[in-house]
Length: 125
Image 1: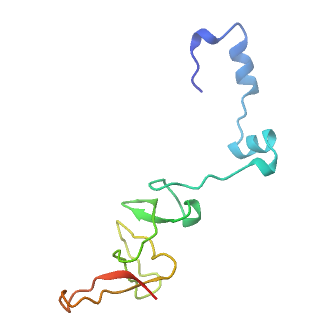
Image 2: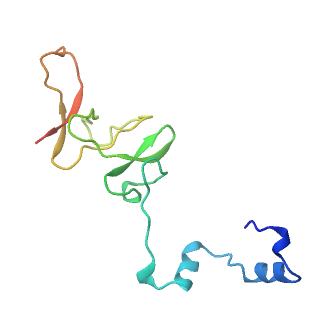
Image 3: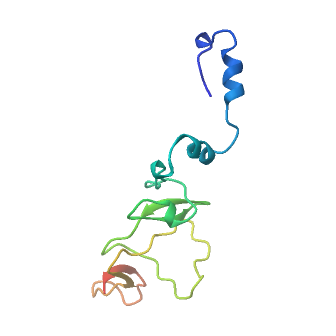
């Protein structure tokens, strides 16, 4: 806690220390608000996360270097990563989110691109 020194009167600092709650934020919230007033704020784009449920709607939790952050769910036409086997994510330094609702990650079918191209994009079912 940061407070200007001039704002303390005799004994005030001791009162603050004595009344300071060393518990968790959750226990503090439970004492000062009713349960209906407690809201969990979901992480915005770029926020550190552990799982997708930590992120706001339209975002997922994906690896970015050695940590995980909230990234946008992919839209139609965006490049996606097709995983052939469950758990085959390996070590992707820049993991992508999954394709959004109604979209599937499929091999890009474009006659201008060589047949050897393995580019996958989010496409309508």
